[in-house]
Image (cartoon, rainbow, N blue to C red; front, side, top):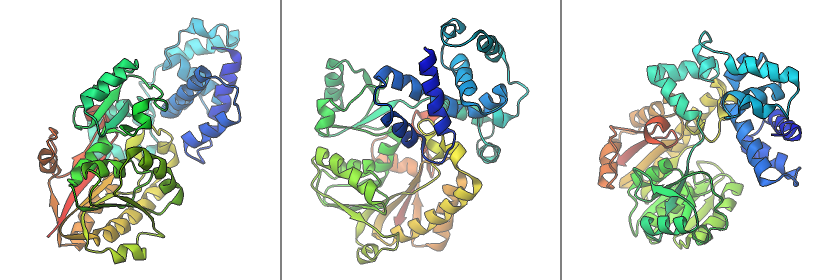
Length: 412
């Protein structure tokens, strides 16, 4: 730890605290302007500023404000694993004395929303849903996510052996038959299996969403909100590169990001399609033709706080209300694609019932031709040993995945 490195991290944090753009985009831009920063310095800055964003509410309480340097020092002392002695060469005597009081301070009398590092509105909604479990859930959400991989075209055992030979430790994921969980955050860009599309970075929860579709060889399948295509590639692998797999999205940039991944995957059955909106004429033309439709709907992302802690400060009751209206419209449009006997999977990476159960229940009330199929039985059909009832609800504290929700709907 050096004075210059602390100054750099505090400058990066100041940029992030504006909360006008996603934290990863802000940090990437920050590093682009400082090409001389080494890998270790970048890692220190990234870990520190993300740590502050995770613990922002409690750190603001302790430091009595939102001064980037003070927030940074408080996080490093309380959560960053640094002893006070490590600060001696990097800060003045006054700051060192202040840090002693910060390190020893307690938050026992602080409101629950402060202790759990949540804005009041979000704490209120989550407490109503999760009750006493919320403390355990947020403790898991405030830890960085592990790095999960999905394996294709090779056995998981062979992949683990190859990774071990390259000095990368990993274990099989507990639920997904394709998943590998790595120890630490090794760089994979030069790993031959990554370059050949044998491994893709994908949270185990996302892999389980693909499994819920039950996609098979030779079918017509649609990933309705494909984004950069992680689940599209998983579906294509389930289909053994046969049939037709449509990857729809309204963002040209996201579909462009799919192209290099698609090339690595060696799948030949994927057809990316840009939509103007959920009611694009392409959707009308293909109505009633699909065996499986996956709707991983745009959502608040509050189930991904391990990776994107800024979302709890960037979302609001108003933005969630806009999203729920969009989710209902997207689900209703995507439902037109399913043929009789076809399956429609609605999913989000949100923890909020208004984005999840409420959207599905309203859809079923207005679409009597669809029935809810218990997610637990669908997973069992796919050989996944994970106890679930009607809906898939994944919880980082219980399952080690991001916080996902999914419902399986079948057309009569």
